[in-house]
Length: 113
Length: 111
Image (cartoon, rainbow over all chains, first blue to last red; front, side, top):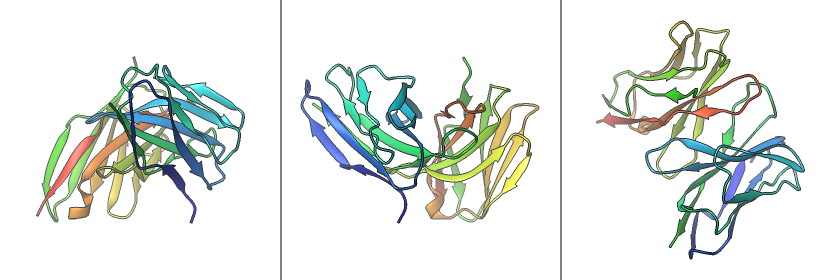
C-alpha cells in the first residue's frame, strides 16, 4: 500500500525534553511538509522540503527542527525551546511544485507536561 | 495579510439532505483550491480540487464551485450520510507557493 505513516500515534514527554516525530512516505513524492493543528483551528505550516537535503521554514518554525536526508523520510524534532508543544502534528507529502494535492499522514498527538 | 476563511464554523444537516460549505478567499492570485475532510483524531483526506480556470468540478456526491468574481469557493455534498460528519477545510495555493488552509467548518449529520 502506498501512503504516509507517522509514528507514534500518541506521544507523551516531560517539559524540557526534545522529542522526534517520525514521518515516512512511499509515494515517491519530492515534497514533504509538517503542520501543527491546535483544537478548533486550521493547519499551520512548520517546515517544508521540496527536495532531499533542503528544507525551508514555514510560518511557525521557532522551537522546531527537521532533516531531509532521504526522500522517504522527514522527521520533526520538537525542542525544549518550543513554548507550547502540546498539539496534533501532521505530516504531508506531494509532487513538488505546481497545483498538486498534499497527502496527509494519520498524525501524532504530542502531550508535554 | 491574505487569508482563507469560512463563513460558518458549524453546520448541521439532516441525513439525506444536501449540504453546502462555503469558503471565502482574499488572494486574487490564487490559482488552485482544495477541499479536505478531517475526521476526529485523523489526518485530512483529499476530497476534490479545482483550478482557477474552472468554475465547477464534480466528484462522487461532491461538487466544488468557484466564483472568482467574489472570491468564493463552495463544497456541495449530495444526499449526506452519517459518515460525512467531519470538519471540512478549504485550502488555496498561489502558483508554486505553499498551501494556505482555512480554519474549517464542522459538519454534523442529524439522523
